Length: 329
Image (cartoon, rainbow, N blue to C red):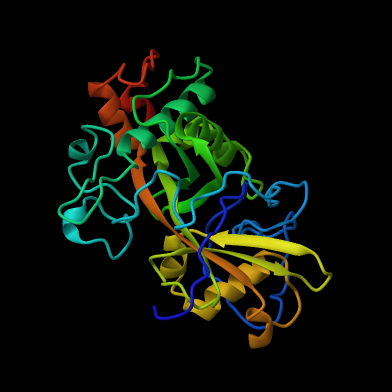
């Protein structure tokens, strides 16, 4: 982008929400009834805000889950990632499966691209595994055995949406690189049952669910808070609030584009989500520490999950009977 870049973002843990629940009216003053972390309001935790310290979302001590100096995971390859501007031969599409879904379920790493594109790590099988974990939990079956896809460590988020309009139902993740098998198990249930914005998920909701897995890559600390691209980069901000406390908040790459926000609106929304209540000035925005990152994302509906499991019942070691289709009609 031509701006000076400070490379070397860390992968600090952030058990936090990732995206907006509804369109927000943005202004330079606190919205009526706005709440900081833990406060009321349907989207009060969407930005993943938390004070630095011992509470969830806080930045860990230096050195934990560090990413390499190029902004990617140690050993990971920077390259073509799934984003709204993905070239057509890189496989997949933002936020969903390219039909037919079965073609993407053939093997881990589905969505590998043509020349110049690295093979994607995220796969539809990861979404299947998340559905397995949630299904077994809700029906009281033993958890599924370890899946076949890679167990490499990545920062990750699990997002649940529901209904034809795909309303947010839960979204929690971590900026600490976790082994995918244990990380997806943990955040599948955390996002489904412990997102404080929503009640715990129930069996009756299963047939209307969509599951998205986002693997975060290419972390870069930037010196200019505008040095990121809407629809391509996720951003995490760190700032000092009016009480002198350090706060953090994040949005995944798709959020700003889905909400129709520009750079300033996105930054201001994150500040509000982080609990900043004073008027937002351009001078204050310049004090923000911003880390940009990218993600690989895959989405699967419950219907696609059932269709896959009907043909590959024991592929992930899931030994329980799946419910008949008419049970949820």
